[in-house]
Amino acid sequence: MSKPFEIAREFEVQASPGEVFAALTTGAAGWLWPSEYEPRAGGAAPFGGTITAWDPPHRLTARTEAPEGVHGQTLNQLDHLIEPREGGGSWVRYVHSGIFVDDWDNQYDGANRHTDFYLHTLGQYLAYFNGRAAVWSAVDGPAEAGAPDALERAWRALGLPADAAQGAAVDVDLPGAGPVSAVVDHRDPYFFGLRTGDAMYRFFGRNHWGATVGVAVHDFTPGADADRVGADWTGWFGRVYA
Image (cartoon, rainbow, N blue to C red; front, side, top):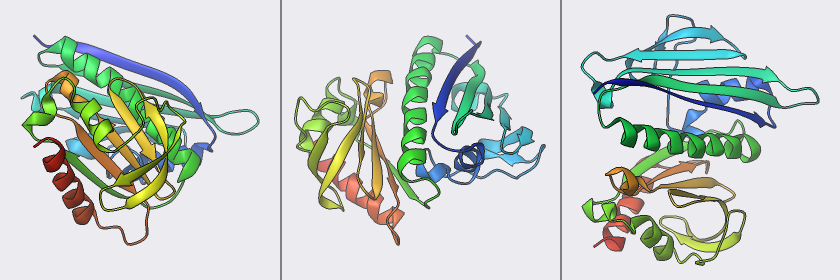
């Protein structure tokens, strides 16, 4: 049964409104996925959407209508309000709203929890990689990566300490990158994130919502190759969940 939803967040970042706006519109590969916006009200937005508010660096709103329920929604809207903070940095209000077609509780729970992880990654990007170009690659695990313990298996397969909490410094052997030093910049039962000097690795426990564990890599290394990164992680998933 179709039903509307709204997910709202307010947060502060140590970046100017112009830097935040750029991260949303031209730098999304560094923290979310590659996205293109036609820079004007009425212009094209990702996923067949339309920009309904374009006021850099203060307001960005994009709306997508899909009467046939594409991706489980008939309406999706993302609204960003950005204001400067006294003393530096920015205050951001983010509102994701729309209409889910069915399986409302599961879809809302997944979208709500993903929101916090994505916005956390935006903060990491602005703090450590602001303005740097990124190559983005994402890989979903095989069917076996949908098991209840699949995210924990990924953690163990990377050789990460069982008790490493958010903020811990770790040594890890990453596919394609080899042994590196990293920081566990996020860890909860649904997601974990690793940050190195040149990349961010986002692990999604989508097994909680009927899908499979996946990884997104935001690689800021000059000359990084998305196809190679994807192949490295595809091979890793095949070995871990064989």
